[in-house]
Image 1: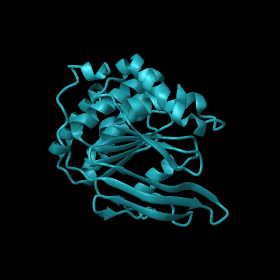
Image 2: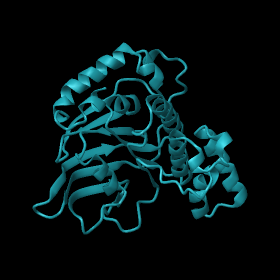
Image 3: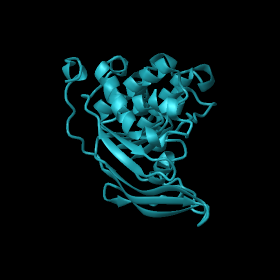
Length: 290
């Protein structure tokens, strides 16, 4: 029994989500032709509706490439792709065509905010595209500012706020589109430890309340375990799935409490023992196992 299991302040249990599954089957992606780089090799896994799946593996193992394929962002002339991706009952074309699957959002490593727009205006971009009226936009922006703890910063510009605040703005902008599936590519990787844990806690709360399906790529094993309902571990290049771990700690979780919990430390050490061979010599050993 973990301390998380005994947490009576964790909030009500999640209702069954109504979203769509993400099903990846035998996905192989090779860049540069026959003599090029095989990024992923027959990758298969499923994210059920409402799951928060974390994906971990050494640098260059194809984690981000898989997200890009789900988002239809792989340049067609750069790679040969076999296998299939389905979002719900829709088969996804992984090649870049200017269109992504409806109901899909992407939070990148860099926030990519528009510097000439305020925090509120950046968040409202998707609402404008969706054609919402001004009053409805304002109400939704205010709701999202509150959701990510930026109520006092709506009129600030990106250069006036911290890196953590910019990533919160980026997450809120993605949520404004109201996707039922969110792809997140190491969004907290460049942040200091305390800011990262704060954003992890906010993400868990938002996920628990919104029932979004999330695929979250990270180099950090502690982060993968703290966030994920399941951890999918990739091998070194070419990326293959070497193991999946069902995380035993109850959701929603408090990363600040978990990282000081001896059972969490023991579980992290056990997972690390099983996957550490893939990180040796990759340069990621210290970060992943920390």
